[in-house]
Length: 478
Ligand code: HEM
Image 1 (tube, rainbow, N blue to C red):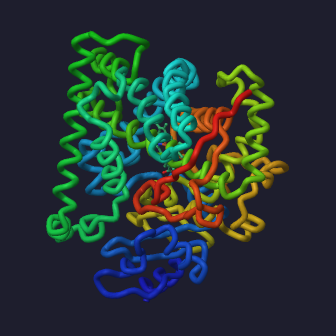
Image 2 (cartoon, rainbow, N blue to C red):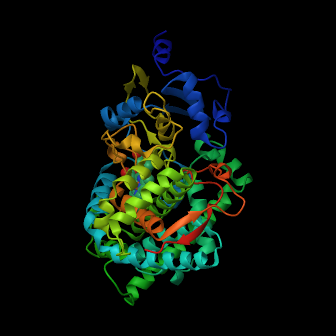
Image 3 (cartoon, protein in one colour):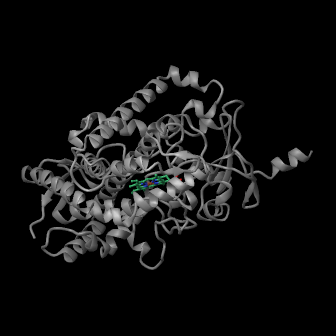
C-alpha cells in the first residue's frame, strides 16, 4: 500500500503500452509531440520511454524548479550509447556525469577556452572568414543567382571554429566539405540519443545493429578520431602559424601534467573536449543564423527595421566590429525572438536525476531521465502573448535575457549545465547576421511568395530548418 501511495504522487502520465511504454508517442519530432501531450497532461508529466522513466517539464515555472531550485538533484547526464562512443567514455563536458572531473573540466574550459579574452583574440579569424563569405555572396549578387544560406552559414562557422580551435583553415584538413557536413549532421543525430539501446539497455543493441545505426555511428567515431590525430600531428610538427589555438592550449596542459578530478589529462580527454567544440559550436550558430534569416524574410517589416539599424549604426565604414554589434539592440531582439521560436536544442541535453525532489508537489525519483522542453516554453500562451507571431518588439520593455537567468527563454539551457560558451555563440551569430544584413538586401527566388517559405524542422539533438534556405542577394551600395 505504501508503494502505491508513493507512485500516485508522481506526475500525470499518458497511458502507454507494455514494453515500449510511451515510446510510440514521440514521433519524428519529439519536442513537438511532447508539447502536444503537455497540453493534456500538464507542464510536468511522466512518460515511460521503453524501460526508461522520463519526466518532461514544459513551462517556465517548472523549468525554474528543475534548473534552479533543484538543480543539484538533477544535473547529471544519463549514460547514452551515441554520446559514449563520441566522448571516449564520457570524458567530455556535455555528456559527462556530475562529478569532480566534470566540475574541474568545465571550470577550466570556461576560464581558458570560452573566455571573453579568447572571443576577442579570435576576432581577426572571424573578420577574415566573413570577408570570404561576403565576396562569395557578392559574386552571386552580380549574377542574380540564389545563394544557399543554410550552407553559407555552416561554412562560416566551420571556417571560424576550424581556425580558432585547430589553427588550420578547413580546406587543409582530411575532411572535405561534403563529408564534414555529413559527419556533423550524423553526429548530431547520434547525440540526439533516440536510439534503441538507450531505451532498452538489454537487447537494444541488436536493434541498432539491424537498423545499421551502430555501423554508421562507428564510422563517424572513426572519421572524427582520424581528424583529431591529424590535428595533433600538425601541432607537434610545429609548422603552424598564428595565435595559440584550442589544440595548442590542450596539448600544453597535457604536457604540464594537469590533473582534472581523478587523473591527468590524456589524448582521449582532449579528443572528447574537441568533439564538444565541434558539435557544440558549429551547428547551433549556423542553425540560429538560418532561422533568423528565414523569419526576417517572412516579416519584411522587421527585416527593414533591422537593416536600417545596422546601416545607420555602421555608416559607410563597411567593416563591422565587435563594439558595433554591442549597440545593435534591435538585432539582439530579433535573435532572441528567433531563439524563442526555434531554440537550436529544443529539449536541451537530457539530464539524469540523482536524488529525489518535487516539482509542483509531484515526486521525481532518482535515475529518472529529465527533459526540459524549451521549444514548448517558447510557445506557451501563459507566458507569451500571441506566441505564434514573430514580434521582436516584445522584448523592449522586459528584461528577459537569453543567458539562462530567465526561464521563459532558455536557448542555452540553465543551471549547472548551462552552455559554457554563451558569449562566443552569441557574438558569432550577431556578427554573421550583421554582415549579411548590412551588405545585402534579400529577395525570394523568382515565382516564390512570402507564404511559400516553409518552416519544416529536421529531427535530431539540434533541430535545423529541414529544407535549405535559398535567397537572391542584392548588393547594398552605401
Ligand atoms: C548559438 C550558439 C549556441 C547555442 C544555442 C548553444 C546551446 C547549448 C545548449 C542548449 C546546451 C545544453 C544546456 C543544458 O543541458 O541545459 C549547451 C551545452 C554546451 N555547449 Fe553550447 N550552444 C551554443 C554555442 C556553443 C559554442 C560556441 C560552444 C563551444 C565552443 C558550446 C559548447 C557547449 C558545451 C561544451 C556544452 C555542455 C555543457 C555541460 O553539459 O555542462 N556551445 N549549449
